[in-house]
Image (cartoon, rainbow, N blue to C red):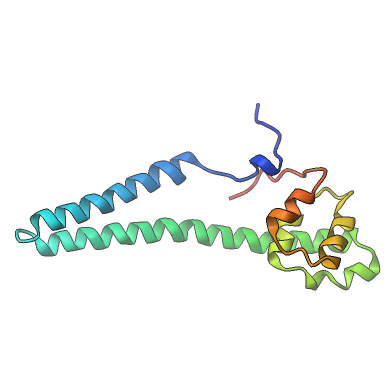
Length: 147
C-alpha cells in the first residue's frame, strides 16, 4: 500500500529515470572525456563524436522531462480554470485570469472545500511562492497522475 500523499512527499521521482539513467549518462560523458584526453592523438575524430553523443544524450534526457512537465502544466492550468469556475463566487470568477501558472499548480492540491478561501487569500495577499501556497493547504488533495 502506498503512503498517503501530502506536502512532504508529493514530489515524484522515478529512480530508474532520475538516478540510474542520469548516472549512466553522466558516466558516459565522463568516460568519453577521459578517453578523448587519454587517446586524443590516436582517434581524435571518433572520441570527439563520443563526447558530442554523450552531450546530446544528456540534452535529450533533460528535454524529455521538460517537455512532459510543460504539457502537464498546461493541463493543470486548464483543470484549475475549470475547477475555479465551478467553485468560486461570481465576483471571484472574474479574477481567475489573475492567477499565475505557478499559483494554479500549487492550488491544485487544495480540496474543493478549502479552494475558494485559499484562492482568495492567494490573490489578496499576492502569494506567489508555490511552496508557501502548498504549506497553507489544510486538506491535501493527492495528485497521483504526476509526470
